[in-house]
Length: 512
Image 1: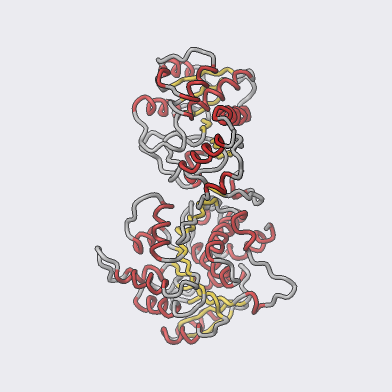
Image 2: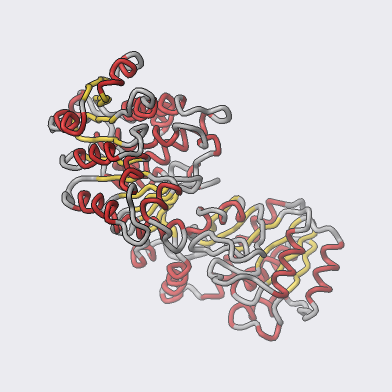
């Protein structure tokens, strides 16, 4: 079961490889022997392997040079004891095994042949039902070469499924990046204690297949000492702050969202966002429309109100009503100086602000390649009011235009951007990340491919705005919106168009 499918999950922390190493160290310091941790890890792998094959099936275990290989030796021994036909191909030189891994190799009890190619070729010729990848764990930081690359190529060529230990060998546990061209493609992965970011970030998520988290005896309270700042985006992260009306609630206590429309030829995006904000629970929603588009918007709106405006001053007159406490600007507004001026007006008020699409790209006009004076002006405007919530919702193309070519993983880049902008950044995609300036981050994994359709981003921005209108804190509002957006799309399935999404929200909210 994926994290997003289990709404009851409370432990949403993701541990980096260094944080997981610290969790192991704290466990050992608390009295849990390292050999016990490895024995428990290997048992978890054996248990999962037994679910994937028939009794007495043939299983080949590929063991590497470190603790990952040690886990593989444990799994091999336990599976053999349960009656499976198990063969081990230790790609590492047996003489180089150290510590716990060497001890588990000794407990395997059979000679470890240095000519692993012959062992593997013989084992694969017998058509195993399962391969266990215990070559490298999540801490790998370099491309796989030589004998290990050959072993991975041979494993991937087999028709049987692969069960990975900790993470698919060749995947960076912190970033999800495939380190080089030789990477295991696993059907399932058993990891320990907590997921790593690389299990959720692409392409790691795809390469690991279904990820199962096993309890190996690490005390749960070690995360309080470690203090992780990266989380899986599931309801356990934000459900306690999701706004719910009570018997005394009325439309004015549930917030008033304003969605700024584009001109007469591009009004649909704002209406999508406005309907999403209303379905997300905002008590009132107004579409602020350029005068030339008022009639077009009026013909399409019912429960959503409409107010015409003429230029930045006109929009300012609408927003001057302090009851209007959340603003969405960008969808369908057009990339122009005029849109930039509207954003500047919106940021003069205390209302929470969601800047999407054209609202961001408009600040990259006339931008010098070496400097970014225009976009820095936007960040300065955001920084003038630190009490106001601001959420930026770029896709990868918009992100690059606004923030340039930042180095590092998707998560790293979003963290740098959020701190620089002083705003929540929602970097969209199939593995959307939500990041706060203080470094907190949530990685989403429930977005189905059906969301790759025109207008879905406008709906997401509207959901964020609707939750902000109800005074939900910005990081949690953004994370909740991303999850609700994905859950609604998954509920509908193939054939989804953006107009379907807002009206699916009540079903998803009812589940919560």
